[in-house]
Structures are given as structure tokens and as C-alpha cells.
Image (cartoon, rainbow, N blue to C red; front, side, top):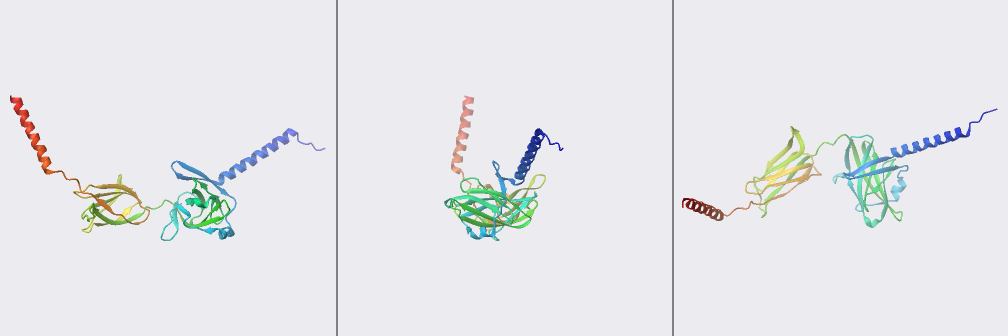
Length: 285
């Protein structure tokens, strides 16, 4: 006669089975999440969903340009594609964008060829998500759906490179004029990078303006620059700027230094001299 296990043993096995299932579900959920850092004070968790955008879904969606704007990654205006550098595997492309509030969008999804994520709304019209990608060229389809289930699409072409991005090598030109619009010649223009050469010395490039007030800076290293413009007789200009393109145009205005009145200075000197004479005569008396 077969001996059946006790009820307590069966209950224990059943509870253990349920516990294992819960652990597997939790791990699966963790594998489908990725933290996206929007700024220093804002981190959102992006969840991957099991479906992907079908060709029919893309075809039926309305193509929009101005109503759905991608803020990150930056898309080049020359070849209409973005390029990112990622030094962590697996690769994720962080996407931040805005939609026209008048469209009443309730959901935004982003997808590569086989994987799709649901974007989070940061505010009423700004969304963010992190999409799995592969090294090389990626076509990311972003679909926004309104409350009437009408869909709008935007195709984002992204090239993923592995590693840390090399700094931009800048070429900047422009003009320097005074407050009256006259060109300022022989003004010194200095571009100072946050990148260092050695011994905490920043990488600097400088040049001077010609008789027409124009200057040209080439070989400035890095997108973030501290710019200094100087010339005797003018108030110097100092400020920081972050460039997005390799070739840029930037104009400056220098103001003349305020000149003190020579007659006023003479009067102050005369009064000081008379005061000293009065003090000496008083002491003698």
C-alpha cells in the first residue's frame, strides 16, 4: 500500500512552490527596468514591455515633425541623425522629448526592431524613456497615442558608439565692435577649455582681431569654453558657453572704459595740497 505524504508536507511544498514563482517574477521585472537620469534631482524608472511596434502600427500612425520634438539625444541638422557614446553594456539610448499639449497625448512608446518601452511623462507634455539599442546604426520609432487612440510617429536614427566621446574640436569666428558699432582691431580673444593639458593647466587657444574687427579661433578643444576678450581702453569681457556644433559664429561688443575728468582730478589735488599747508601752519602756531 502506498504511503501518502502528510498534509503538512504538502502544504510546505505548495508554499515553497509559490515562493519560487514570486522570486522569478520579481527578477523578471528587474531585468525589464532601467533607470533614466533626467537631471541631478530627477531619476525615473523605465519599464520594458513584452510587445513591439509592428509595421502595421507604424504605417497607420500619422508622421509628425513639429508636434513631437526630441530634445535628447541631439539630432544633427546636417544628416538628421543622432550619435551617442556609451561605455556600459548593454546599450541604452536615453530619449527625452516633448509633444504638443493640444494633441492630448496619453501614452508614448519607443521601440527598436524587437524591443519596446513605455515612456514616462515628466510633466504634462515632456516625456522620457530609455530604449535598448545595439552598437552601430539604430532606428528608433517613437509613437504617441492620444485619448482617441489616434497615433503619431517619429523615426529617430541613432548611431551608438562604444566608449567615452572624444571632445569637440571647435572653429569659431566672429566680429568685435565697440558700443557704437565700430570694429575693434587688435583685441585679444582667448578660448580656455575645461580640459587640462598637464599640471592643472587648461588648454587655451587665442588670436587677435584684424582691422575689420574680425577674429578666427581654430583648434579649441571641448564644447565648454571660458571666453575672454581684452583690449586696453575697453572693459574686458568674460563668460562661459557650451557649444553644440564644431563650427560656430560668435560676435562680441566691447565698451570703452569710463574716463575720469582731468580738471576734477586737479581740483582734488589742489584741495589736498591746501589742506596739508593749513595743517602745517596750525601746528606751528
